[in-house]
Image (cartoon, rainbow, N blue to C red; front, side, top):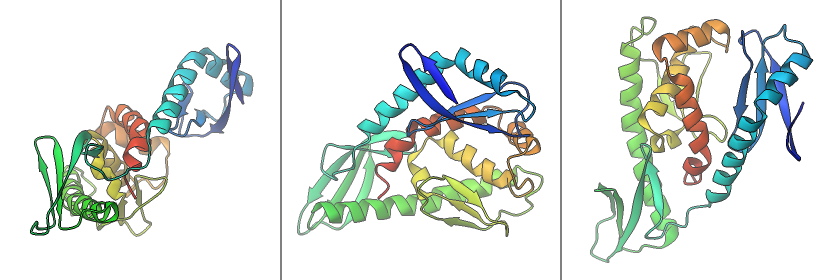
Length: 241
């Protein structure tokens, strides 16, 4: 489906599903793709008209997503660049000394990496190992905390970290929760949204209306958290080698 705004136009993917009732939902993804979710019983002309009424919004968010993608350059692992941790930017400071013990410290908004030989590959390995350790500790704790609040999880489910290119998390048919370690770079409330999303899949295994009702019951502002996480995806994943 084509949506036009002035002299510009964009092709949108339309998906009609029983999970959507009432108004259509429009998603602008970090790569600039636009998806329209609509109720199964909506006529194509009605969907097109509804999307066209929001053309300005679509193009504003699409342009912002494309601009953010262009800014998300690969990390060089040199002093002065910034890296995310729990949603905040921290300046990378590299210390090189033959007598220096290899370590990473987070101090007053700075990520300080100390190494005997601070070539970029070594800095990347050491920093990514630090992120992995923080992700294991923090995400595991959050899975336990959120599970305790839910009536259908008497004990926290098995949890594993798994690097994923296009997903923040998943729930296996066996009930294992997988989380992308890059989540440790995202804001805390976005992390909680992803974990809750996957925990809801333990009893609702698809994105049905019942699934979204359950998600909303336990996190009223989940859509806001999702939009923020989507908007940060390119910047966060740029450092997730």
